[in-house]
Amino acid sequence: MLFDFEFTKEKCAKTKRRAYIVGALMLIIGFLSLSMPLLASFAIETLLGCFLLAVGFSNAFSAYGAFREGMSPWQHIFMAVISVLAGIVFLTHPIAGVVTLSMILAAYFLADGIFKVVQYFRLRKVGGSFWILLSGALGILLAFLMWKNFFEGATVIGIILGFDLIFSGVSLIMIGRGLSDMSKNL
Image 1 (spheres, rainbow, N blue to C red):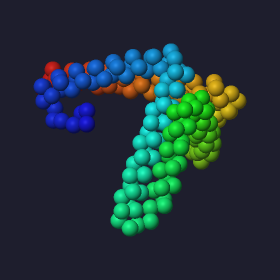
Image 2 (spheres, rainbow, N blue to C red; image 1 turned 180 degrees about the vertical axis):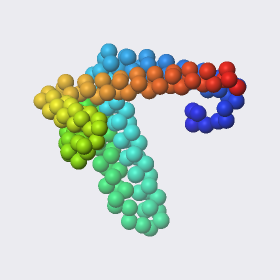
Image 3 (cartoon, rainbow, N blue to C red; image 1 turned 180 degrees about the horizontal axis):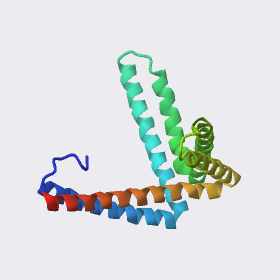
Image 4 (cartoon, rainbow, N blue to C red; image 1 turned 45 degrees about the vertical axis):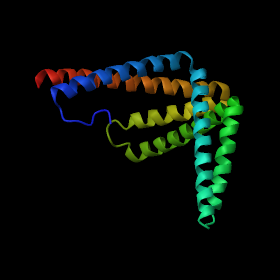
């Protein structure tokens, strides 16, 4: 883990450097992702295709082991075939993979938005619950915008990745700054 240690001056300094470096790299990659969101979406899609192939081969290996032990590994075989086929589709047809991810993300935003609107009506007497309603409405709007044009929706994947990396990078840099201040007091 990045921050699994006792707070000594030496360890704070070492971890501070690591937090600054990793945070700066995350910021750079985040800004690159925001400047080229479609390219970032294709990178995520390719990575997912590789993961699906790895899962498929892992399930095939597990099925082979089960066959050797005399068991019936039909679930492993089924998952291996599905995972390998999905991985091949994602890697050989990247546009189809990005559109698929876009549809899944749009469905997630729609479901999340509906649940937040419902949650607002359950919590509307609580102060600040308006922000839940606003978040839900924006999620539903984003889902419909993504459903309207999947190619534009595909860029949302890269934009979300960019913002996530930027906020994560800033948080690591701020933790590094906090560790710097802490090491001065030790």
